[in-house]
Image 1 (cartoon, one colour):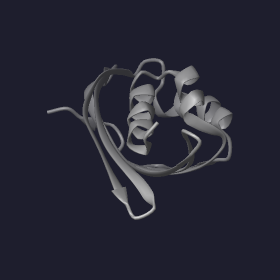
Image 2 (cartoon, helix red, strand yellow; image 1 turned 90 degrees about the horizontal axis):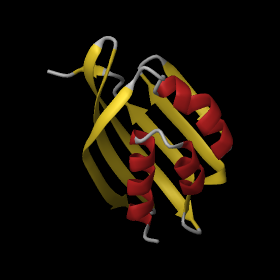
Image 3 (cartoon, one colour; image 1 turned 90 degrees about the vertical axis):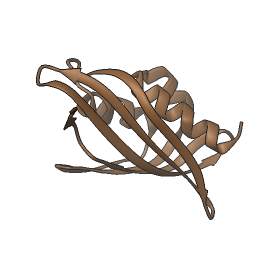
Image 4 (tube, one colour; image 1 turned 180 degrees about the vertical axis):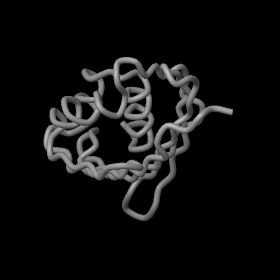
Length: 123
């Protein structure tokens, strides 16, 4: 599988909040770090990402309605992806954008860095 497709699979699995698919896309020992508006995140396994990060980033009341944009590119020896979700929760409609850089091995993401805009009110 090509590296850009792996990135697209990750973004789609994240939008769907699909833990099983995320565990397929992420290597078991993924080196993950992220920065959101209020917190820095770090995990060393796909299981930790699914158990500790995913439910905080997108709570049960947060509904992702659509993956609005998804871009991929190569930056030297890394892949880049940028994606924008549209959703809603008790506070109303929102958008959230993330920019990510990643590396793969054997069809899975082994190294992942994400910068997140946080939930922004949809206008």
